[in-house]
Length: 230
Image (cartoon, rainbow, N blue to C red; front, side, top):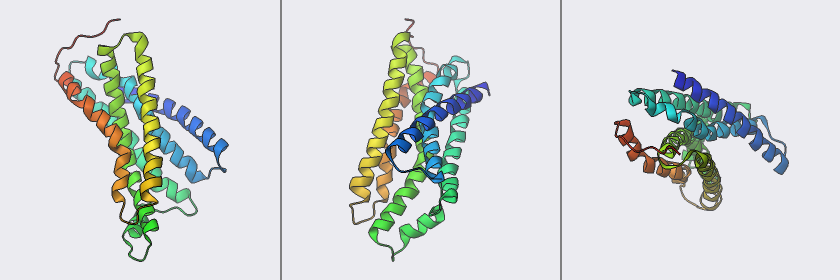
C-alpha cells in the first residue's frame, strides 16, 4: 500500500497549495468568504490536486510485475479523495452555511411544481455538480496517471514537466470556462429543465481520459513499448 500513501501525500501537498492560491484570489476579487465558501474551495482544490497526485504515482503503477494490483491500489487512493470531496460538498458545506441546501432539499426543489424554473434549474445545477465533483476528481487522477506514464515513452526528461503543467493548466482553465459558460448561458437563461447541463462539467476530462485509456490498457497487459531514455 505504499502507492496509496504516496498518492495521499502528494494529494495533500498539492491540495494545500491550490487551496491557498484559490482562496487568496477569491478574497482579493470578491466579498469576504463564508465558511461554506472555504469548504467548497477546499473540495475543488482536492479535486484538482488529484491530477498531480496521479502523476506522482504513475511510475510505480506499471513498473511492477502485477500492474493490475497496483492499479487497484491507485483506484482505492483516488476513491478515497472522491469520498472526501463528496462529503465536503454534499454534507459539510450545507451544514456550515446559513442558507445551505442539503441534497434531499435540492431534490425537493428540483421536482417542486410550485417553484419557478429559475429555482428548479439552480437546484438541479447544484445537485448534479455535487454528484459529478467526485467523478471529476477520479478522472483527474486517471489522467494524471496516464499522462505520467506516457510521458516516459514519448518525451525526454526535460520536457515532461512542461507537459504536466500544460495538461494541468488546460484542465483547470477549460473546467472553469465550461462551468461558468454553462451556468451563465444555459442554467440561468433556459426556461426548461436543464438537469443535463451539469454533464458538461465532466465532458472534457472524460474525453481526455478515454483517449488515453486504450493504449494504457494495452500497457497493463504488458505490451512492450519503446521508452524514451533521453
